[in-house]
Length: 246
Image (tube, rainbow, N blue to C red; front, side, top):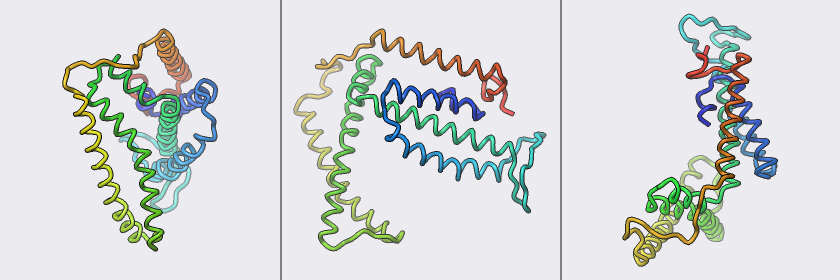
């Protein structure tokens, strides 16, 4: 991901996006149907936001010549602005594809336990994050219950902006109260089990780093190096530390 963030050309994030998509389909075995909607959303967001704004309002550095593709009054579309906009869009889409791959193929409990046991992450903070993650589907269920209760009482969904704001306020109060009650119960349960009383703790599930994990890391580094070296060889790589962005 650091290579994608530090690159200013559209080819680097495009290459990583293709690699991430191939890994997701063939190694992660994640169906494309589950990722098409978020990818389409970010493609549209990038097309309307980053590409459009940079194409119209790109401000070149002093002394840089720009190629004007279209102009009308104070508005103009430049090739350099389009390149920057496409680069930003592909950067976001590449990050999204790897984020989807991580979320859909990684068990959150195993991930947090691995951070605590192997990366020496503070176990108090790690378990707090895990508990908060487990609360998310519960809040979604409770939101559905609250909405159903409102509809039974004749309070329907609002369509105006002001109505939606008032509706959000009505949902927020019971959700916040429920979250506080659940947090208190969890805190009492953790105190009753003497959670955090000792600097170290034992674990029922051991998470160990295997040779397959190291092989995956080495393979990822090799693929990253191959992509960057290939793009640099053909003069397509632009970014910090390799080739100055033009």
